Image (cartoon, rainbow, N blue to C red):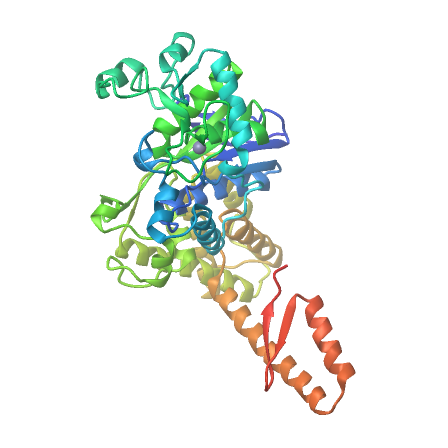
Length: 491
Ligand code: ZN
């Protein structure tokens, strides 16, 4: 299969032509959320970036297996090897079970991801469901001499690793530099060297999330799950590993070290990282009071926000920037994005109402070529949008009579807009969605009224038929004293 896609590989620091290992299959692994709090802007960006990549690879003909993990154990405070598990801490504060915390925030995450119209990955494995696979990796690391056991905990031996391989190939941090920048161990620490990291931690008596192992009753280190799950679902070598830039160090460096030590080679062909989000020029942090969850954005319920921003405004705003650039959120910028998005949606409406003439003054195939070129150049969504806005300008000119388009041109321009805007960029017309909901609601009122009339006439056959047919269509009726309510069935 041929493609002209070039992507920036964080490992080689170059744009490289995308050549999959086993076409038409593409393996894509993305580090997912640690589910201990509401999903926020920091989750939206990688979700949208890799959704775009997933959609585009699928569009150009690949069969993508997209794996995004859920971290539900082992991620300790400050991303360190000491301190409380983030999920367990939340459970203690909320007086619920750790797995209740996981479920609650996983539900929010999925709901928000649906609102942002990101497609579900092919597999969403959880760290707690892969404890055995993680333990198997630890056994190999111990056997090969890249790990050691102290007081029931197992640590990765960075110095042993660095004798045969090189740590820090992704972030460019070398061991000497790490050595000079890291605190001196005070002898209390179990680690031989400060940049060793935990593969398995012996659980303290009060620690709730714990599993038996050959070394102690305990839990896996944060980095290990991704090595275990990427190998399990995508194999010892796979095409793309993605995540936010903040994960490069230490998480991805540790993942590379673990996998390389086990397999004898680096498993990932292309590493892709999205850049970070700032709020009014500042880093987003709970301590700065500018930490905005997606629910707060969609409801406008945050002191920083002057109004509500819809999920598609957020999606459009994130796509307006290249994924390797930083994105700065401000009310002004979001309002401008909202205007741009509305303009794009309106032009599609206009496009559906335009009457064709006998001649055409737009080179549509030329426009299509430019759109593909933009995406092929490291997923340049802002350039793609600028080409689409050239199309918008043309559509508006046709509508006011200063340009012309023939029937074939109209068909092909509609197809182009719908492919790039809806299928690849994953935008959707929220007005249509809201309008569809209202229409469904109005129709259901009519149907419920007809069934009530049948019941009043003791025409049970008709009323049962209506109920059963609705059930087949995925709608469940709940009878009330007067009339009925309806809801969509779960499946
Ligand atoms: Zn990961």
